[in-house]
Length: 204
Image (cartoon, rainbow, N blue to C red; front, top):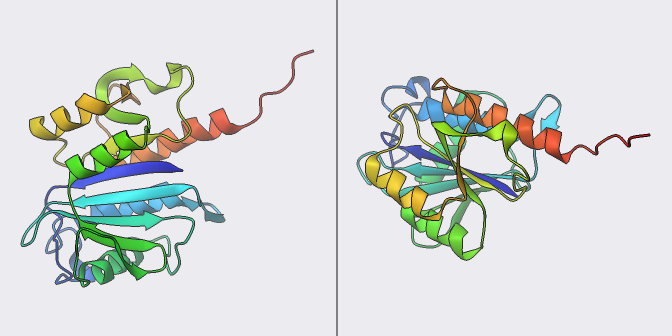
């Protein structure tokens, strides 16, 4: 599996928001919805080896993690409203320290970035932090196929969050010299991984 962790600093943490106003009343939930679609959808199918973890830190009840699992996911269409609806249904559940399934392939629990990073460390996963001044992702020798990629939202990553990530990250990667939207970053990362997974032509 490949995992993407997206930090939503303003994303509303209850299901009390309008699907017609994802950028506003939902606390820029539109950004997270685009990340879900970029991570999971292919032109005529879905990536089944992907987990997307949304770390929701907005009001009124911060500290929730919504996980989308491509292998079991159902009822998701490639538009923001569809993914927003699944997040909304998840947030209507009572979140505890243990995952609760809201719909097929979508779970919710309490927790934050530090909890997720600790779990990945215990699983001995390779954690990559995305930043403009990192190492060029195209020049990494042996980018791990079971990788975890951590990205911020439109607010970036706080100093405290960066410290949490950096303590356990395998590398800080760059996909280019300019700051890009998180969903665009995911598309580029997956393109690099797709290329690595393709069998190399035999040389004569």
